[in-house]
Image 1 (cartoon, rainbow, N blue to C red):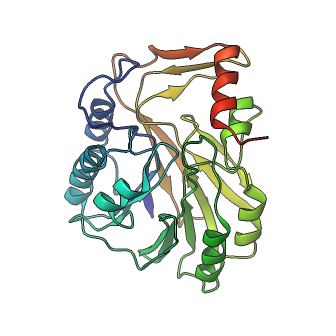
Image 2 (image 1 turned 180 degrees about the horizontal axis):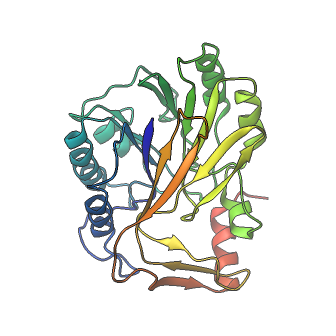
Length: 294
């Protein structure tokens, strides 16, 4: 099983430079163009922050660009929500988020909650992919609701032929970085309890715009860098620097050494150019505004 893992495309209704001077659509185009010769791929997953402005136009462009890439390879695309996404617009364009190579909804089952959470299940070559919704409206941190965790436990009661992969936005692991602690998944213990003893082999996330590997108890967790930009941890402690350069990950499952991860970077002549910098005061303000209320 080879998975192309994309995240944090941050498209908007306009195909042009955003407030930081980056054309998010062009970043996605460049990444997909450089992935044309990628080895055999079985599924594409996109782990949230598809749209930066929550517009239907952004989701339509994502569906068209990523869908064209997937259609040429006859593989499905599985989308999950992120903190920048808007559930109603997501659902209107992407349905459950699980699309076949022709762009039709192909989820085997999906959750139905009063707040419209987007979580669904698809079987791909014997692997069960479960997308979850860690979006907290108008906040930057993540939370997987009790309703989803109950639903997930029910899904996992029956093992899949080759195991299960979870896909959602906010990582349940962090480096020793303040903004990650504040704006990551805030209930990882509840998720760990839901998957403990199940056939979940891997969790795929985004959100941090950089690559991290670790474990949630005994379950492997991979965080892929962003398509729109990457976070540069050589910035001074307590500050944040984003740099240009689209990235993605090829994930391999089903071999004795699995899971295997290979990060790919688009051939961008502007790669490494600073997109924005936040000093300690500015970053603290972001955390205060987007983090959980004390």
